[in-house]
Image 1 (cartoon, rainbow, N blue to C red):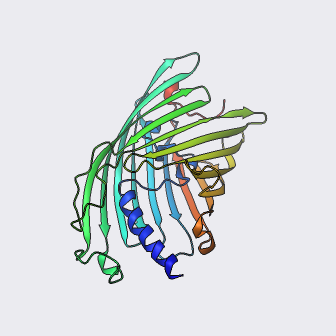
Image 2: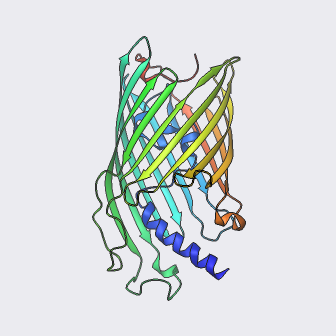
Image 3: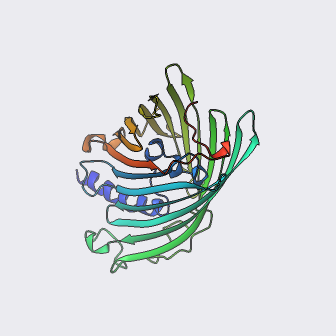
Length: 320
């Protein structure tokens, strides 16, 4: 048990450095909010869209990671969109808060075949803090005194290609190297925080106003070359008012351990008269499985101020 607790402490500290400016992506983007992972989705749709997420990871483990975030995006003019996100992330004795401000522009590649291309950019502000007073004596560098705080700014750039029901987005996050503020006198935190995400899927329209949407999400971190992949499947059922309910499942694994998944779990939700609700549960399948009850995430949102764009490149992607 002592070895497990020590492992958790080391995991908390090391992942805190690795996640700085790289907030954990669980299933937030699957709650009909791909703006979470790419600014190019800002302004696609007929509404002002807002989503609030609450996530608790490894429930049952003391001081396990938790995250709260709010995302909002809307269209300006017929072919552009803006968005913003704000977050608070707790990971053991470290915390980070911050915001992203995004702009996207959408163009038509081919009108009749419905091919569109979008470009996006985000300006990021992140505040990172270590609460040294909570660390157990003799388990950390004695040079660490008082709380440690640093603030960083960075950028994301991205593009999105759509062809009818197919979509493919690429996002490069934190493209600038970080100025190291070495807390301990030993260079243990990376200066390269660039990471890359690919998100692709296809919406299969079936009879009776239903959709099946398989998708894949790939993440790669340049500093240590680690990467992971999500394989997802979602089902939606619409009514005459474009309200719907949905369900799905997600499967995440490290790319060097495809047959040893990190998490797997169901998702479900609905949208009614502009109100959105989603819930996701992920079962932990690694060594921590016996010490926690999984990861829980709740999403609540609103879509309002409907205003259809004159350009199909920014119109709502819901079924015809």
